[in-house]
Length: 433
Image (tube, rainbow, N blue to C red):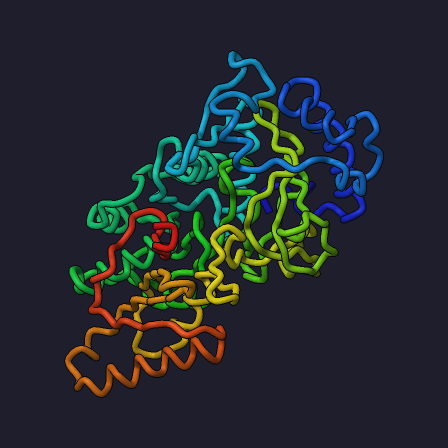
């Protein structure tokens, strides 16, 4: 462990620490930010009355639109002279969400990422190659500072330029690669099609730190088999801090939430009601130590569940399941709720398909139609048409039996679906057009 004092803290002490830090965080937001002051007053909540963790139910939620409405600095709770860095979302659907960091916040950010790396078995002897994008996106600098905090030799290559990535893995002796899971698959495809002479399994690479998008267990297996590495999930949100809110350990049995810095709840996404531990719903975050830009009951829209177990790694902090999707990315197809990750899991159980797909949703009259484009193994395109027809039928039957929906299946050649060096675009929803 990177910080055993907190990572293995008894649960009762974690809750006591959270209560004290919540009192500070709520008071800090209320006293130093006009938005929070107005929101708390409108809800009839005063941080001075906060006495127990159950009182969190009285605190109003924060959502992404609130953050956009307060662009750029409206949610800051410290003077700008104390803010040393900002990150933000792309703002492709309106104003960007902007978050600020004091020097203390940056140190916390580096700390939780260093904990994450250590939980995968990383040590100061490792060489970390950061293939997340650098810039306003939190991934690149987040992993960079966390790697340095742990003591790794850190290679800031950023995303893309796969040939150069491969060169540095071999020349520098890279042992840990940090990137999105879709880019990890992109590398595997590149090796297969353009660099059959390059044997990744003969390099020093042993760990993949994969995050920034939901990915299935089936995709983990595909990445590990094709690249010869152990692939671990790192989770975060730029609105909360960035990567390092939670991470898997070597047990791969869920992601440990760093509860000394983040208070988490699961709510019903429709009613906002807090759900009991173990039930699946939308995860909500409250920062406990952030100075520049506190987040109070932020509705992430990510769907998961929380639970505690006796993890073999010795960490005592609560776990969250791998995120299955987002409540606002959920597709409702003729009354059936479907997440892209569920479609991915079904496809990857069918032999002959490649781990690249795109879901196209359209509407004919009053009814929704779904088309799923699926890349097929290259050798199948040299077989007779009957083989492809049988594969298409098998996929359609799996969709009906497992997901309860009918979908048009279009089989396409390898590499015909656009690749991404960052987050993959899995869904094209034409219904709003």
